[in-house]
Image 1 (cartoon, one colour):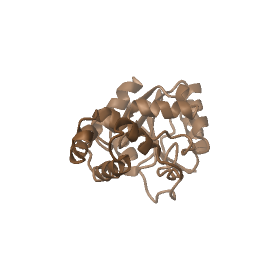
Image 2 (image 1 turned 135 degrees about the horizontal axis):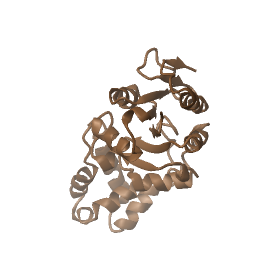
Image 3 (image 1 turned 180 degrees about the horizontal axis):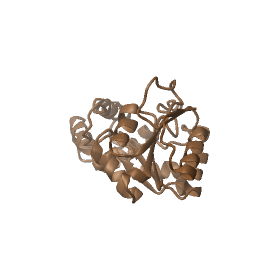
Image 4 (image 1 turned 90 degrees about the vertical axis):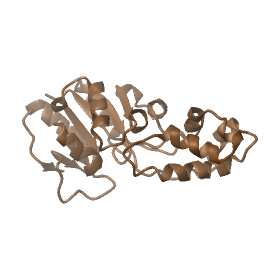
Amino acid sequence: MLRAALMDVGGTLWPEHVTANMGIDPCVEQLGRLGPQVDATHALTVLRRELQQDTGSVVQDTHGLLARALRSLGRDWAELEVLAVRRALCAPAVPGVRLFPGAAELLTSCRRYGLRCVIVNNVQVRGALEYWRDFTDLGIAHLIDAVVTSLDVGLRKPRRAIFEAAIREAGCEPSACVMVGNSEVNDIQPAIALGLRAIRVSIEEPPPASTAAHAVVTSLYDAVGFLGRWLETDDDWGYAKL
């Protein structure tokens, strides 16, 4: 019997890549408040360049990376609190982000079905605290029970440890969880290996030719349908495509 849903974010609940802010970058403003005596625009460029070079590693030490980057910018930056700098790099999701159609309905259905909803996501600088702010701004925070990020765990998906952390938050056995995500490598395969059910979301790309997932959906409304069917019958484990 399903008791929890683990949810990816980028490419699953909202777009993987968000349109850049066309006005003044809010991160520049935030960094400027931390270090008014230095060039915040240059600092942001350096920090983002360093972060981009770290995205391929499964081990994540964002605070250590930022500390090294700040030292390279000179004493004025090196003396700043690394945590404050990381948070300054987290531009609010709203108004730049819009949920995919059906996202709120999917989360609402999880709540209606009595499923705990746990976010499990790879990130650069966004920790659980920043995600809670974003979810509050989007009006869905009340539908989410816990947030687990690679920043907080120190390891990125597909590493087993981040899924285990999410399953602990779910408070049930892996077999009672379903993973909803858009990446075969980062979401579906590791979830299946741990004994979870899995729904592959294909909104921003065509449905895959093959997948280990128990279902593939091109709309989050369809994901709601699969959850309902599994909860009603508890025996529909075959591959399906909508």
